[in-house]
Length: 103
Ligand SMILES: [Zn+2]
Image (cartoon, rainbow, N blue to C red):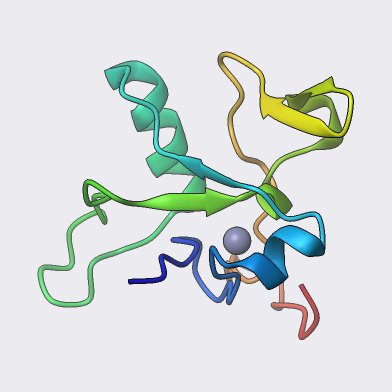
């Protein structure tokens, strides 16, 4: 099964094509405090329960939701910095903020 990014409105899928385009995928942190930060940043509500959305065991976010400074580079590869929190959610609708059609 191909996993896709958990961010609202984001269509990135964890497949070879995305990786060729330089998108990397990152699992939600195991650390409880950091995990909460990510959940807060994703800002999703479960449509059924109307409670804050909780990431499942395989939930991932793509690199488009992180700032360049959140990554450490190892030659051609890159790794998310310890403690990095996603900050870019162009599709999340907030007051006075319309979602952009192009992520
Ligand atoms: Zn994404």
